[in-house]
Amino acid sequence: WIKEVRKLATENDRSNITDYIIGEWLSRSKHLNDAPWPSMTIRDLLEETERDEIREGFYFGTINSRGATVRAYYEGGDKERELVDQYKETANQLYFTHPKLACVFDDLASHYDSDAANKDRHAKLRLEGY
Image (cartoon, rainbow, N blue to C red; front, side, top):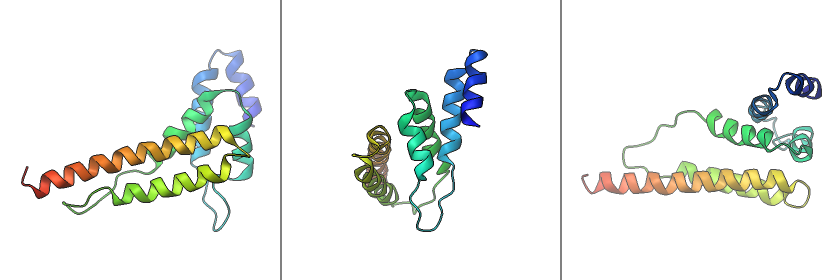
């Protein structure tokens, strides 16, 4: 179905946004028990396409699918550091088989590492009374 959608999008000069949205959809694939996420089919699709928009959509879709988080007033970025470890592990597993997708997971790890540092700074300021 993806090939057909992309074909129609190209015919209607909508390939960039369509690829981005496809990437977002793929980021919302289900996490099944012990199966790797994303699935091999999705990994292969994200790797094989020459279009960066699909991987970009996957990146932002993954971030946006997290939703809001709740934490204690003085809690720092521990929740984000858990995601950093998870995404780094996934990237390491993908480096030799899916290097483009591994870069996406590296970027996700970097995003949450920066977010964790920011949460730590805010918690420290709150502890200091600011």
